[in-house]
Amino acid sequence: MSIRFTAKARRGMVAMTVAAGLALGVAGCGGGGGDDDKPSPSASASKDSGSKPSAQEGQAETPLAELKGTDGLLLQITSAQRDAGGFVTVSGNLKNDGAESVAIPAQTSGDETEVIKHGQSLGGATLVDSKGKKRYYVLRDTDGRPLTTTGLTTLEAGQTLPVFMQFPAPPAGTADVALQLPTFSSGTIKISG
Image (cartoon, rainbow, N blue to C red; front, side, top):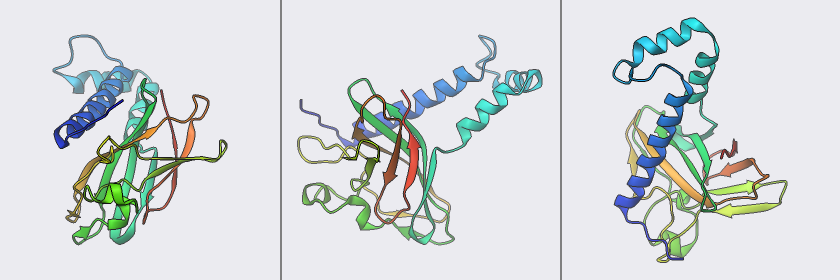
């Protein structure tokens, strides 16, 4: 199977993932049909009628994990979704929490020559299944390009960048895995789907 992604296709995948997440969040909030143009009144009506929608809204805002990097960098993981094709797509935001511009460390690309030659990326990320004793690396297309956000350079103070990484899916019974990225702390995430 030949998988080839251009920068435009990768951005499209990120947009689809974000749109799916937003659609799931909206579906979970309840509300009446046809109120799409007026989300505020239906949201406040839901909050007044009970605490369950508030809990769901809080979960949508809470990251699955936060991995701290050097110089104020923070990777917030917002979803880890199992796809039908046997992949796991991990999405989130890379943020500069510091007061100055920060260059993204070159180590985030990993140390594989084939990945590094395609520019700076999150190609060094891995998922670790400690129960199954397996490590999953970022997938690559037939030209060796990592299936992750690429072209990373510098983040200005306070700037946030949406990112994604695709991995082979662990067995269906495995939900909790550790996400590791060079120069960042490790964090446990739960795979859904």
